[in-house]
Each structure stands twice: as structure tokens, then as C-alpha cells.
Length: 532
Ligand code: GLC
Ligand code: MG
Image 1 (cartoon, rainbow, N blue to C red):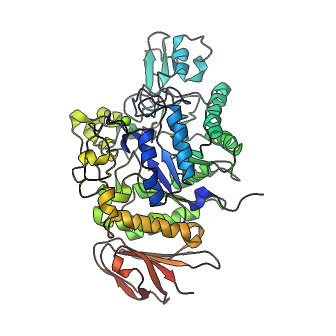
Image 2: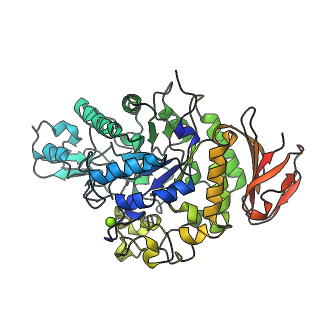
Image 3: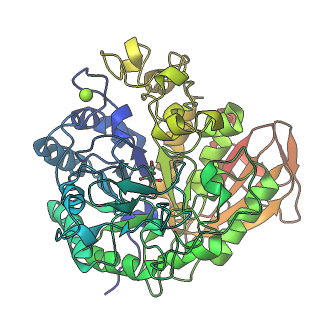
């Protein structure tokens, strides 16, 4: 029988960027033993699962998103024994482990590509996307790499171009080749057999390209401040109809194992995004919903976005919400520190699985990195666009000791200068801190069915406030009221809702009875358990 609910629906996911979480051997780079040391913290925080950005052997041209061996561990992160230890230790604490699967491309140092590149007649030639040059020697078409420049790289040895949607060190696999599919499915099986609880799948909408290779059209909305990639619309290079066969194929592999989750990275408009759920549960369980990463932070915009998303969702699709990740500006930087508590309440009381990016719970900000110290290939290749991802990948701030307790060695990226104020140890002692708000919210969500699985009904939205109810039949229901501005505001609606405040940005409210109409201060939010 189909289960009614799964852990990945009711639970909370926490993303770890392994290089930056905790260093155990003082080489300045976070590692698996470091993560093990911090499992107690994650258990205390109350998260259900951790998702680790890639931990596999890699030349690190794109910090692990260029994999040279899908079934081993990057030595600076540790060994397979360390991984097994992490998996066991996490499971012992009831924490699931989700890994990162990078199917679109390998590293150019992967043995498959080395073979593919060795000659036109190599059995692995067709595992990648090789094309002849045009008569004048130019690349097969105008497609761009996401990281700038042509997506085609000339190979002197075999006199053909190969396709790379990202760096030239990240050649794209040919997913039309059956052997590639089987080899990659076996990668999923390898980790599933070990007991991994799921995968987040990297750039899933990129995996299949139009195999007649037409030029991409110009983007009429392009302006020069945008990355060069956006000059064209990726009409033929991404989100092709056949991608859904691949998605279904992957899902079937997931289905070979009970209770695993398939999460997909897909940056597309809502109507296209929803197709990645597949028909009748044949696609990803959770195609990431990235709306909140870029929308203007106003109550009306967010209210509309939530209804829009809810309306587009397939009937059997489970929603999810994301406020930050290792590619996008940090929340505190984007919306301002004063609003981070509102964002926390929103993320943890919306209908759908929340994913927290490490450090968001303590209010970490983007950390400035000098051009001479830039490590991210996106930053290095487009220095004038201010889109380096280094600032969002700075070391986790654990305490006020040297290097914030991350490492005794020199961290691979600079630390935030404010780490003595914003760190786990300090915020654990401070009842008003963002961290303690996160913890109270997670605890509440994990214990109240209405909050984890209940319905979402908006009851009010204007240009300051958003109010909604979460409800499951026969359980306590909750009214959430959020002030998205710095100015005070009233909730004055016809229904005279009343109940006890269970979590609030202003601690003094917790335990008090609130009855509509009531006023909230600037940047204030409340979760109210409604009277039955
Ligand atoms: C995804 C990853 C990003 C990486 C890119 C190429 O967008 O999140 O970090 O650079 O894919 O693999
Ligand atoms: Mg280390």
C-alpha cells in the first residue's frame, strides 16, 4: 500500500557545503569528520535530513560539481570509512543523509572523458557530445556556457568540438547513450545500497539538448549587466521534452529502494517546473522551488507567489520552499537582517518541505572576498558582474574563538568579520537570537501535524502583512501573521480569530492570547495556536 506521508514531506532539510562546515584536521577545508563532530548540533536544532554538496573526488574546478569518480570520496574530505561512519552516526541520531548527484557533466579528468577524448573510435567516444567544426572552423552553434564564452571546446587531438554547458573542465555527458544511462543509474544504486536516503540532482533541466543543434535565439530582454549566458535564450540547449524520459528513468531507480527522496535542481518558470514532478508520481519528489530566492521581499509579492505556486502544483505533488543555497546571495544580505526572523517563520510554517542553507539559522551574511582571493570559477570568469559565489560559501560560524571554531588552519575562504557576534555558541545563550527562533520553529513544526502537513489558506495580505492558516482536520490549527516591513501594522479582518501565541519574533508575546484585531510591530511575526 502507498504510504500517506513520508519523512521528506513532514521533515526539514539542512544543506551542508562540506568545504565550509567544519574542518577536523586543520587544513582549512571542511571535511566528513568535521560534519560528524557537528551532528549533535544538527540534532539539537531538530532537522530531519542533511544534504551534502558533492563529496566525490574532483579536481575542484567547480568545487566538486566536476566529479572525476562518482563512487569514492574526495581525499581532503576523508575516506569511504569516514563516510560510512557519518552515515551510521547520522542515522543513529535519526538524521537522514542526502547526497548530490551530478548527472549532466563529469570532470574532464574522469576516466570516461579521458577515454572519450583519446580517439574518435574509442568505445566511450559517444558518451560525451562531440561535433565537427563548421567549414570555417567555428563551433557547431552559438550556444553559451553558463559560466561565459562558447559552450564548445576544440580538441586538437581528434579535431572535434565537445560540448560543456558549464566549464570546459565539465564536459556534458550524452544521456541519449544507453550505456551512459546505465552507468549513471548504477551510481545511484551504489549509494542507495549503502543506505543513503536520497539525492539532490544537479541541473536536471540541462541533461538533454536538441540533437539537431540549432542556434539559440537572442534574448530580447538582455541588458549588459546580466551574465553573457543570458544574451541568448537556452531554447534548444535546456529543458527539452525528452528530459522527462530521463527524469522518469532516474525515478524508477529511486523506486527500487524504499523511502528515498529525489530532489531536483530546476530553475524554470512555474508551468515548466511543475512538469518535473512527472505524471502520476513518475518524476522528482521535490523539484526545488526557488521562487523566494529572487522575488522582491514584499508581503503582496510573496502572497501572490505562494498562491501561484500552490495553484500550479499537480494534485499529487508535494510543495517545497528554499530561501538560500550555495549559488545565491544569502538571505540576510538580500533582505536585510531585520527581516530574517520573518523569513524563518515563513519558511518553517509554509506548506511544503523547507530546506535551510547552513548558516542561515544564525543570520550569516555574504562575506566580501577580494578579487585576488576569488576562488569561484563563476566569479573569476565574470569579474565585472559581481556574481562570485564565494561570499555565500564562507566558513560556518560556530563560536568566537579563532576562525569561529571552523578550523585552526587558515580557512579556504575568509570568515565574516562579524562572527564574534553571530555564531552558534553566542546565539544558543541568547533567547532572542535568530538561532533560538529557528529552533523553536523547527520543534513546533516537527510536533504539529497542521504545520508539517496541513493545508494552507491565505486569510489576508496587504503591502505590509501576510496572514495565513495551517490546518489539519481534528488537530490544532495555526494562524501565522508576518509583517514584511519595518513599520507597525494592524491585522483587522472580519473573522475574530483568537488563540495563544506559540512562537514569536518578540519573545514576550509567547504564551499570550491574541485576538483579531491586533497590532504588530515592524519586522514582527507571530504563530498563533487557534482556539478550537
Ligand atoms: C548547479 C550547482 C552549481 C554548479 C552548477 C554546475 O547549479 O548548484 O554550484 O556550479 O550546477 O554543476
Ligand atoms: Mg579538513
